[in-house]
Length: 322
Image (cartoon, rainbow, N blue to C red; front, side, top):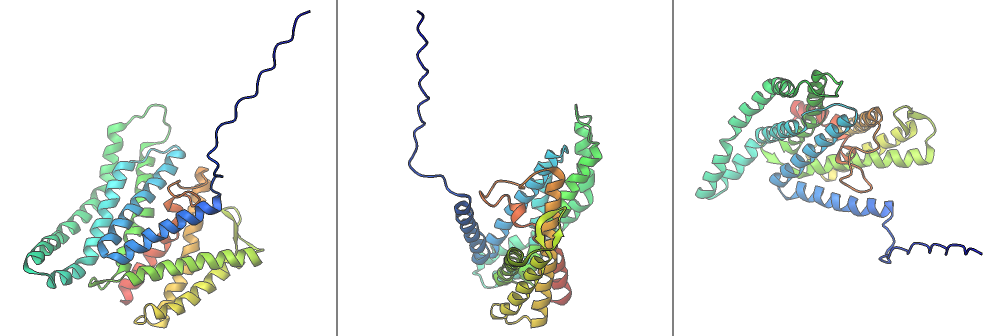
């Protein structure tokens, strides 16, 4: 009588470290705290660290935008766009900080002053560089497409790639570069408090909208774009942002209450619009997050999307009323 085959032993369990995986909430808290320390520390420490931090941030945001566009089938010039975005950010920073660094140079020793004035002499070349990039950017991108055309197995027209590359510069890099306009008062002093105030207003808008939406939210704000957002949440975010605008009198007493409330209103209105715009972008290309640089938080474009609508309006307000 034939014998039945011996049963196959179950696979050995993989060794474990004995530590449970970190929950999504724990990841959000941990990496959120690390990101907040880097953000606030770079803004507080000096104008240089502010520029370095946000210069890298806007380059990463642009790369995430181009990544989503590649997911949709486009082939934008990501490396070229990133280089041009850094030139744009640096040039605007130089132009806005010229008075500040001139004041710093005036308080230095002779040798240090010489070094600082050498740096200040780069301001005019920076302005020329900015104009050159602005005028020649479309031509540069078109030449890039001419060099690589025709592309095999690619149905996207080359000028669509040029348009997407330009859109990334206008949608991401230019608004983020305007942060230097907010940070410098009359081009004479770098004021980290202004950036802290902006962050507090944006966070107040988010917290107020989340709390009011969770407790009272019934009427959808834009269900086809972001089903979780409600009108009740929008009102809650608006009110808490106005309260924060009033409270910022303790941080920036030289700013009038009227001006602070106007800035708070701009943040409360344009911040959610920026968030909705990025949500629409992600839905249109069928991606959940813009990136994975911060576990539990998505990408930097997800974190700073509100800035892309807020900063052009704030920069205009400061240029007009400062």
